Length: 312
Image (cartoon, rainbow, N blue to C red; front, side, top):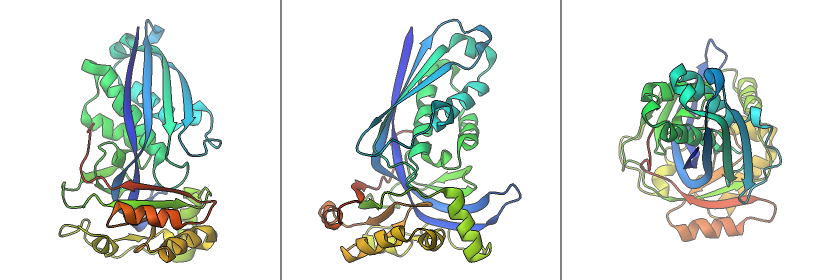
């Protein structure tokens, strides 16, 4: 018998990304407002049920279908965050639940989110995998606390992408709290990427070199009032990794400059890059800015999501 579940895997942008210093475990402590976008991958998980001696980890295969982005840099299945999510989920199931579940797992991904672009594509795919496993598990589904813990084990951005709604992400990413629906207006966004992959460890290393481990100043974790226009958003946007990444990847700075010259208000790099985004007041404005970019750039328009379409 086979059982299948599918979920969209929503991209994200970091509206704020403040680095609060280095932790004892070697990670950097963060405080970030993470907002999901309507841009998404599609993730499906199929489990073939049957006796699986010892309840061991099922054999995993992953098939990726390009949906407008280059997938050539995707590594083998055992290095994929979706496979890591499945493994983490399996190990948290009690042995009797494993025995009732699958001996083979197939994960299908339609990729629309650029790989290594600061939009959380791999983490979003892992979060969608976890949600699909929860649905398939049914009565054997894990409690919410376990889901958040295993998501943090899989990757720093995964907990923030489980609900599909805007959150405040803290610690190294393992601490998330929802932002009230309606506080952030669901405005259009234009996204641009110069076609390069920025290494997250290299971005943080550049921050340490450039800033000497300087901690961000204390500031409110979330806006005090509704953000309803592109100008309002411009007043809160900040990314402590932007200047360090600009220093090692001038093409990312050029992308921000091109968006600004095309009429974007306060373009900002998302996460560790290389994607730069700008929030617009209308879909027409977002499309016009995207169309003004020269050839050679990946570009897309999307919409900020102000409330979660699903939850763990």
